[in-house]
Amino acid sequence: MSKRTLILGAGAAGMMAAVHAGPGVLVIDHAKRPGEKIRISGGGRCNFTNLHCDAGAFLGQNPHFHKSALARYTQWDFIELVDRHGIDWHEKTLGQLFCDGKATQIVAMLLDEMQKAGAELWLSTRVESVRHTEGRFVTRLRKDGQDIEIQSENLILATGGKSIPAMGATGLSYDIARQFGHAVTDLRPALVPMTFDKGRFAELSGLSCPARVAGGGASFDEGLLFTHRGLSGPAILQVSSYWHEGEEIAVNLFPETDIAGSLRDRRRQEGKRALTTELATHLPNRLIAFLGAETDLTGNLGDLSDRRIDALTTALTDWRLKPTGTEGYRTAEVTLGGIETDGFDSRSMMSKTVPGLFAIGECLDVTGWLGGYNFQWAWASGVAAGRAI
Ligand code: FDA
Image (cartoon, rainbow, N blue to C red; front, side, top):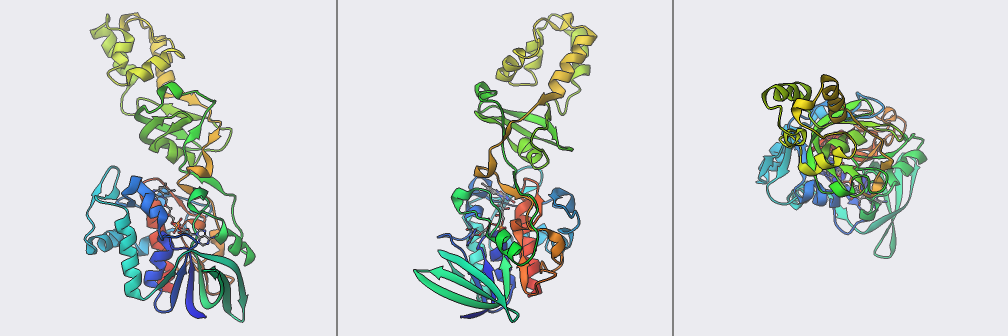
């Protein structure tokens, strides 16, 4: 069977490319349903883009590669599409846009657009092999117990990264890229909770508070969540993309408050007030009790020397913690690293060495921050490849 364009992966990027790639498009996926990660994303409401999407919110060996596609298909373009489909949305925080209803509305929107564009979709379809002969890709597929050979002018790699293998994530795009001579960077789980020695934060499990978390040269002011296994919450997930095994992270529990100045003022005004009572105006009681086992929090404000206030300030604003690792691909939202972008054209997402071969979305070495950035990259890179075909 002959097709103009074969797209491997009916996820965010693959479906978006199918909408824009013109006639003769077949999208295949080994899953039973398309866009499964869209469905579960954003707690089932899909954080589909970010109002403040800009190039600085992305990591990758080449810090410029993603700029062109993101500039030519912006968050406003995607919002316009969502609006056109009558999908209601809201900004949750920090420019993050979520559906008011279900994430499946986004999947339905993409399927509708694909249908209008005339793209065909085959689910429960396995890729057996890919060859490139006489300028055409020959892909052997297995569907409904049958072997089917597809010849295509274009082949788009869009099978995403390695995160959440239980949902069917595989390294197929990496393998095919390597087969065609492209390099793949080191890969590691990102936007992922961090683990600590067993039980380190177990008694705080479920507790959250605002914090500034720094690690690997980056720092984020967002929520911090204590879990049975360690630390999570947006601030930790963000830093996990920068952190390397063996490094410490620094947690500031007073990102918005000059705690040293505040303790000095309160010492003058209310010397008889217990230090823990004062801290409880800023932090949850369970956390104060926990910190009290590590740092001396006894006594009244009037008893505090300047030196003790300084030591306390360091303990509370530069709390050094050494993760043992992360929860890995089992729970990571994305894979950091991917197919090296230097081998691809940043305008079209086409291979510089194999004409007709494209890579889009998470399988490339472009990783966004938490907050809708990864979907915006999937949409933008998908559109870039589609338009180039
Ligand atoms: P994606 O993973 O979407 O699609 C790849 C497709 O390829 C899948 O349909 C898969 O079945 C298929 N496939 C894989 N291997 C195959 C094989 N061997 N053969 C055939 N098909 C194969 N981002 C964001 O911006 N906002 C958010 O709210 C969230 N939330 C979120 C929650 C959770 C739990 C996760 C795991 C991830 C997120 N993300 C996110 C990240 C976001 O889901 C991710 O960046 C995009 O889905 C990437 O889009 P792709 O199309 O590249 O891959």
